[in-house]
Length: 168
Image (cartoon, rainbow, N blue to C red; front, side, top):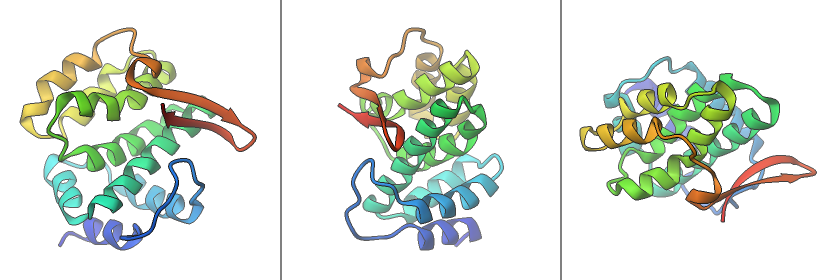
């Protein structure tokens, strides 16, 4: 097993229930260090990490990516996009329904658009790390204008703890 795969599998709890917006700082720091250190992962690494993680672990990696996007939006920080995109690619690799994939990646599309003015480079990047059958559709969707959180059943919530992205 690849070293990066081992590090992620050992960092993400295999059991337990964590709320969607619950603060899990230790996991966020650990995943940030590991995923931030994976420079330009290819599809085989994304696939290997996805396959090594249990379903609950993939959910936690996905939630980490969403929390990272929320922080990026709150801080107007586009530097979160590569790490968030890596987390979302890992968590979404086995998604076979294109509509469900769009629902999962809508926060990334919105964040990339707001932070850089153009979501297509970020969505092209993630498309290269997903299975062939998802690439063409994801690239086309990444070029669509007018993608909103609301249209894809998400909302941005500001609380005393900061900005959060939550499903509706």
